[in-house]
Length: 403
Image 1 (cartoon, rainbow, N blue to C red):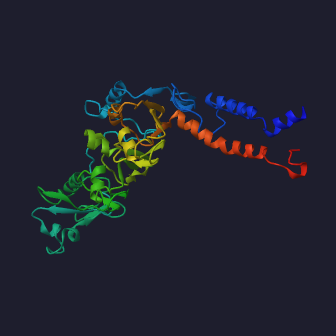
Image 2: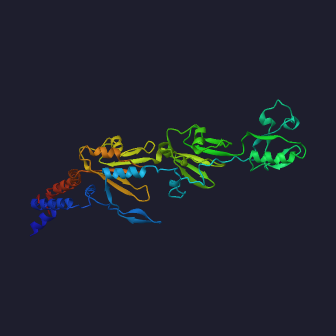
Image 3: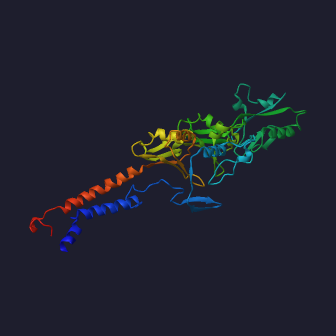
């Protein structure tokens, strides 16, 4: 009895060790998750982890269905990405924290330039050169022009001090004509802009020459302001141009204008606007699992497919990957999505080439069952070897016997 106990404790019984190994193998094949790398991600119809899903106005945890990547799915995705038919105004959404896209009162309307402090105007009274060029005819237009004072007023002979700030040149002309009509018969008067100095916008971020751009009477859109600043740099994200106006930040998607002609995504700028062109660092996708070169990839103008991502990452590891189980995990939206591609046949890469990825997508390639089993064995084998060596150790103090 004592001898059996010693054999049981120190593992001298070869049959017992074999039994323990068989039990361990059975528990491993049954899906025991206490050993890293043993859990399989295949044969699932929904996510095991509950993810935050937008339902109405609330985020609730829920398990997501895994959608197979098929021709029908790709057709549905292309229909959803197709721009709406019409003038584009119906698709504009109000700016919110979750969807801060620009939706002004009328983005396509042409703003009217109104005078402000610092602007210079030229006032011409025909047949009365003493009023037009009282200091001589050899001065530049800016030198001979009338500057709008800090309080928004201007002075003109016989008309006195009038309020010019906030008015257009046509309105100033009407006021001056009415006042000069008391002194000049059939007055003919014109008011023109000479220098625009009161209104400006700030263009920063990934542009060639960041800085201040003056607002003039020529309507200027967000894209115009970027072009005046030298255009986009190679690291610019055309779809993430941030427009800050009166304390609210909007997302202006210039890329959609290039792709679909969506001019409503190119609003007019106003005094004090801040235009910040973001970089491409946000447009990353992550390729993980049994990949030759796992890591992150930066998308070019948000254009990348599943086949391109796998190719750029060196494609799947042929010796360890299971091509039946390629997943795309998309969590950067109100409703996260999970997709699955079975690529055992080379034809499946045609589906992968038509499957568009989005920024922050995660591509995961599962390991083959045999590879997972070999990894588990590689972790267990050193421990079993140590136990076997320990069980065969001779102890001289006890006559070569184990105590």
